[in-house]
Length: 250
Image: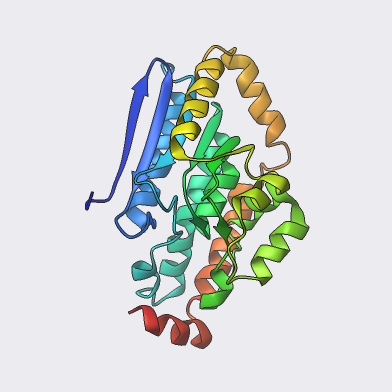
């Protein structure tokens, strides 16, 4: 696979939304926009009863934001727009009236951890370690941190944020509540996801909607909050410190 994509497949009420990018499933703005649109549309599609969110390939789940786009930011507005991409995906997942199962087959970094945290039920392999690497390039996990803190708590979030060079094992992520279950390999993971999705598709859609409201209670202000956080990151990426750090990625 060499071409980036976001695609959806609907089978028997189960919508599988898959994204892929040849650079370790990093997400540039156009893929984030397409992912937001696809999740939103699946949420209002009456033929869809449950959503499985996954990435292509068998290694990295998501390497976070596209560094190629990051180094090209030259003004505050484009910086805010860039970081709003992950904000929009998280808000689409939050507002979606269907349960979203996250399939995390490999490492998740930065925004990838945010997407995993925004899933309603996340399942992973033992290779799905996580890292918030933002401080290593001069910014911080400001946009994704509300979703991550909601799942694993402030203490675990602060550990990951401060120790930005370290990958935290999948077992640690499970202990903290990010992953519901961790499997030995992708085959076992996929079997378990299919079983769960087949059960969920038989749930009362009205009950599922009310449960989503319950799970995400108190987050109605996130449209504004995440936009504010995107502006912070957009400003920081223009700082001399970050610009100097990013030179090595050009």
